[in-house]
Image (cartoon, rainbow, N blue to C red; front, side, top):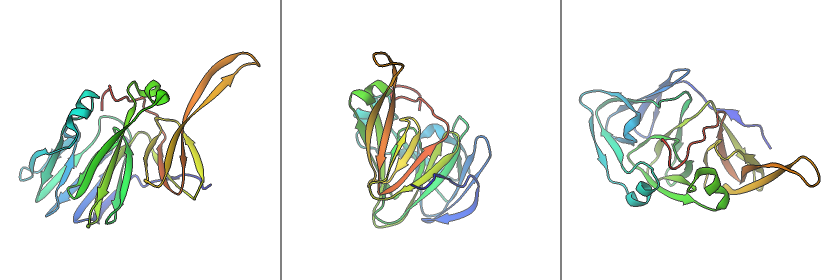
Length: 233
């Protein structure tokens, strides 16, 4: 299996899907987007600044009630240009982009989303089970972003630095449940528990892992953040 590689932390004048964007800042990076015909949507609390000409409104969202009872954000905000807009999260980390080709999808762990171009569709599902409920109280959500007939762009935030690895068929990697960020839908995930023992009859606890099996990409963050569906986003 290949070693995970660090994604770029700084970008200037990047163009994709009808948008130009810049990512700058070492400790708490800022994403700046220049909009023309293509708009974007985002969680409202990540907005940092915008040009006065940029119009901001509410984006309709499916499954509002299910997310509300789980303590997740119940609406998305959208912006339309022309003009510039900027985003950041209240914490150190790594902001990066995923360029999605037409018909491509990506699965994202909850609380990692920053922004997306307006033509990217959004859905979510809750991952439940005894182990996941122990980890996050009620289980956790996986957000899925999908493009239609056009290319789109997705911006995510990772805590610490973000590394990506490409798994071959049946290749596997175990990642701490709070350490992964996104994966290709072709990558399967299961939860594994490993008991730690201090002797033949004694138990010293256990470790919990998310095991990912290729083929496809999986990304991880170097700073584990124990965020739950009932906590802050």
